[in-house]
Amino acid sequence: MTDSPGKKIVVTGATGNVGTSVVRLLSEDPAIGSVVGLARRVPDWSPPRTTWHAVDLEEDTDPVELFRGADAVVHLAWKFQPARDPAVTWRTNVLGSARVFEAVAAAGVPALVHASSVGAYSPGPDDRAVDESWPTHGWPGAAYTREKAYLERVLDTFERDHPETRVVRMRPAFLFKRESASEQRRIFGGRFLPGPLMRPEALPVVPDIPGLRFQALHTDDAAEAYRLAALGDVRGAFNIAADPPLDAKVLGELFDARPVRLPSPVARTGLAAAWALHLLPASPQLFDAVLRVPLLDCTRARTVLGWQPRHTAVEALEELLAGMRRGAGADTASLQGHTVG
Image 1 (cartoon, rainbow, N blue to C red):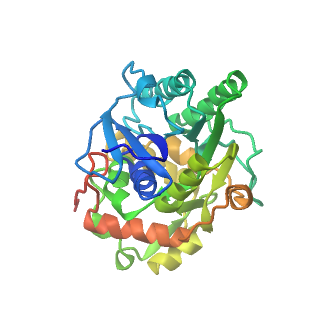
Image 2 (cartoon, rainbow, N blue to C red):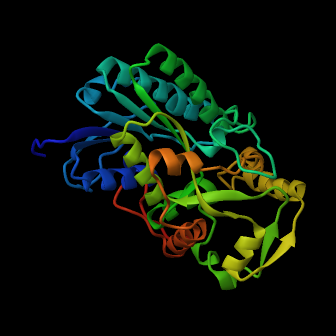
């Protein structure tokens, strides 16, 4: 990569679902001089003005030298599995993130953009969406939500100790794109979930589980929010999600299927049995957390960040399902395509 004028942005977790979209958008932006992508495994993919470094945050790695001279660090690195060993995910997600934050301060990076989540929020009301002032204590039963909430407290301390650093916390809904289909099936559905099942004619009914209503967002739209945050002068938290919220009615229309009421204890028992038999990689505790996540009010992202999604939540989900049917992926180790069934 040749030196060029413009900003230097470092992206951790740069080869995953969100990272690939963020790196691509940054590499196409004329305001960017260089993008430094950090990942456990360096990909063959070579976007313009981008260099790669192999960094594993589970190890006692200090990335401070890689951060020097950066205008912003976008911290996306996250490990979902092994869900059966939360000590491993804690080492990467919490201890590794804390090392990233410390390195940002040590390197004098003026801006940190951190990938928080809707999962960081405490259970919310059923009748309205919540803004960024809603408590971020997560759901204690699931490792993912515990870790996201804990990092919110770590950032509280970081901001107190380093007021010179501009900190942005992105709190997105569920993020989907075609290239993430194989990865997300591996993480959440497991190797026994057949791709051909993800087509409308294969599902005559969809379960209508009380409380199961969630928001989604196309990953490229989320990446645009990260780009705006990295290059702008905003601070604080931003909810990002697209309409409409996804529930049994919307999913029934998507699959041309009839919603059938299924009590949540029955659904959870089935998930717990599949988990116990190692048929499902996502824990029943994660299901408990999903039932409790609030709907997001994204007014601040529109008015302060200047962000708008280009895709609806249904379009994002349709793209993911189409990718699952075809075993879609991308040219990175995290997003490697794989057909099942």
